[in-house]
Length: 83
Image (cartoon, rainbow, N blue to C red):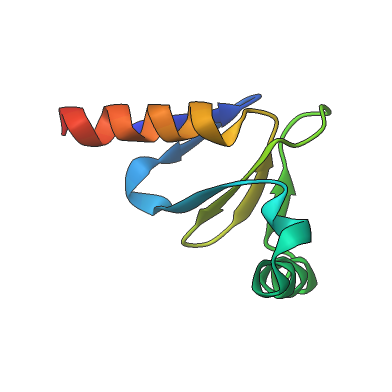
């Protein structure tokens, strides 16, 4: 199954590690370190031109998505429920 992250970006649901609200980047020291490390390793991708609302962590890339984390979680749960 696949999950649409916004724009033209679609990922396999099996690649998904976590979906977080973008505010976690500012509120958690560990999250901030994780994102900094991902940026240094050039594994961060911004989807579209809108302001990001969520951070989607996959096995290989960290995506900043313009779709809210609540909506993405519903999409992910829909696929898990139907699997």
